[in-house]
Image (cartoon, rainbow, N blue to C red; front, side, top):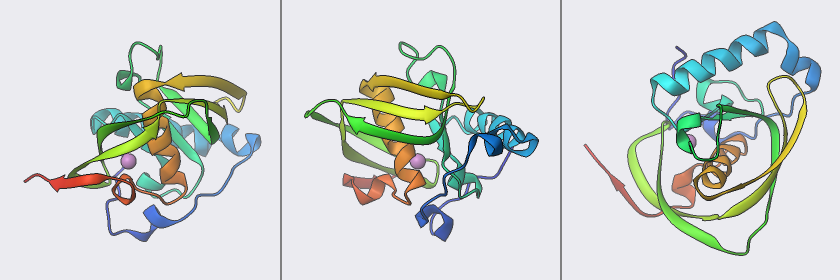
Length: 159
Ligand code: CO
């Protein structure tokens, strides 16, 4: 298991770099993806972005358990780009493995379209709504150095 970086580590605030298909297919990248999945599952996270394990690259993943009605497998997204497919936003409580014991209500678009590469370096494109759309927006924010606490209201901490 990889260790999860928490605030105030500055890597969480950097814009991560795009990667190409060749990079995705490298053995070391494939190993990173596998290790990130294990780390995400062990930490019981709904998603995980590469900067959270110290890699400043545009790679993130969504745990299948985050939205079992819409996901058949864990979802690996490389160079993900999304655009809104709804005007509507919804408010829901979020937390983050990199901001321990902290929660707050975040407004997110309810429906988005995502373009990315998958773990095989193939182009994928799909529409996500509800919880899945929320988790993807949260993870892509990580790749831009944005944390949910930047957007959240009613932030509170638990012991
Ligand atoms: Co997070």
